[in-house]
Length: 264
Image (cartoon, rainbow, N blue to C red):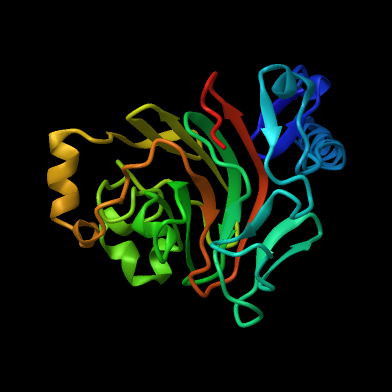
């Protein structure tokens, strides 16, 4: 089956012939009727893929689920339990503000990897994805770079490219805004290969940068991160989901680790 966004298209749909008139006077009505019937059939046949599952091809390619519909692989930042604000609702990893604060972290640590997931955010909402974050400091963003999650149009951070959705927060702006309307799912890929980092959103590579270069150090020195010497320096760390006080949802969280890229 062919993936189109988050919708699965059955093979017969790709081969479905286009409807054309036969040249008769009522060809328009006939074409419209066939078109309507076709659309109804496609509507009935096309369904959203079940979340939090790997295809046989993904499993063979080395992907594993980080979120399998449970919180078994997760805990709070610098704590053994899971903050109460994080829950599972209809198979979706959900943060509800006001219930129990705290960022969510993977129990495992990772070095070089490809992370894929989908997110959606509430109106005016803010969240983020940390990577290679350690627990040596008070907050994960003191050590781990952040893929910004944001409702650009509804949040002040959306007015500045370097803090808009898809950015490497406060350092690298996305090449364009490819976010979908608030409440819709956005697809993410984050690739870490040694010093090289890529941010992808909705099939567009929006950010690419290299850690630990003189250019990168100068850029860090121009931001608030200059006060945290461990920022971005770890070669292995946790993946984190940010509690920024706004409702946010995640699904289909999976990872493919490079040979030798798995940490503790």
